[in-house]
Image 1 (cartoon, helix red, strand yellow):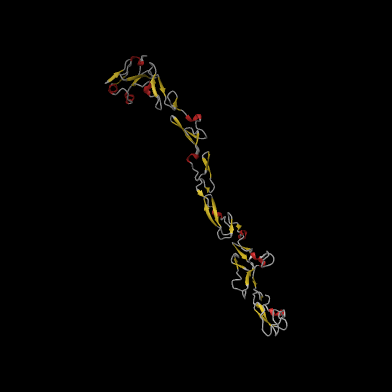
Image 2 (cartoon, rainbow, N blue to C red):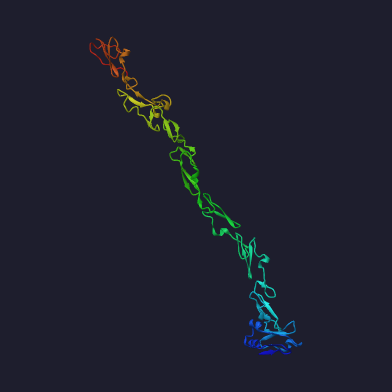
Length: 373
């Protein structure tokens, strides 16, 4: 079966037209099934020759074609990137696109370059994204536009009392004495440099050291000064002090002994004075000077050694061991015989004499006379 279009002599198969009536209003397959009807008059599509649901389109040859109805206005989805399409007025082809942020243009087809205004500060890198931008901040800066400098000292990175100096993208610690390291985390071993001299033992302390100079003969913060033991005058009885390394020695005067010459030797302890003589030590300063002085002159450590025996009458010598011969002076007169006695003498008078040398006679008797001591 064939059907001729109005104003034409051409007949076309009827099947395609019937199929158009059975298809939905908008299907691409309609374009393949629709036939071309040459136009015989100027009426073309004015008579609305196409079946309902199709659209007449004039051809260059003077005919027309019936095809699917073409969408118009917002139906063509002219707005891009999620824009809202709103019809404008009675014209079915009139519309307006309302763009989402980040896009512009009649059809919202243009992506706005948010980085064009250079929103990122301090040399940050700007990344243009859909409807927004993102700043990649350099080290030391933060914020949406990298406008804020990061305070690296806010976390208190410096330990053991160190002071933090904030920099751009960094910090520097000024360490307290005795500490080192980027964060002042290291305790400096002040003994590593061996500051103690002359064998002193170093003890490491916080922010310092201490030298133990015991037994070295030296003193001072680093055991650098020799100890002068004689400065304190340790030797007694005017003894001389001889310095040594960490020690001293006392040179005692004769008559004194001991490590410090503190002992006065008791020369009288052995009883050197005989026959009841009194022993006097020369080291006794009280025996010098004055009206009743036992020793002449002033006391001197140079002559303080030894002793002096004060002998009783009738004895003499350094130790009173010598009995004085009282008869040596011939005290007996008139031929009297002198007998020496301890601390005296006795005259044995001849006949007719008696007395102590005066020369009077007593007959033949003997008279004992005590001479001077």
